[in-house]
Amino acid sequence: MNNENEKWLSLLGLAARARQIVTGEELVIKEVRAGKVKLVLLSQDASENTKKKLLDKCRHYQVQVRLVGDRATLGQAIGKAERVVIGIKEDGFAKKMTAFIDQ
Image (cartoon, rainbow, N blue to C red; front, top):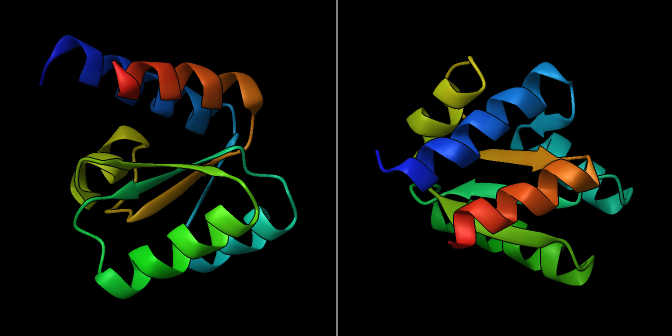
């Protein structure tokens, strides 16, 4: 893992402990519709159907999406089992995470 990768993963863990994330496809979509999610992290190994559904929904509601790592990495970062999609609810976490991922 490179240093930038560790930074956003650490920040994701911090956001999870602060209860500023939602996980799971249906819950993330519900929160995107409600305007509560600022950033969606989607694992690169998600199914094509899941990717299309989430990307379309986020595009419609103008929510940023980043394709990152794999489901095991996402799950491990938040101390849970494998996760395919994670929504970040807090604006500060979303901005900083986007900056780390885009480096």
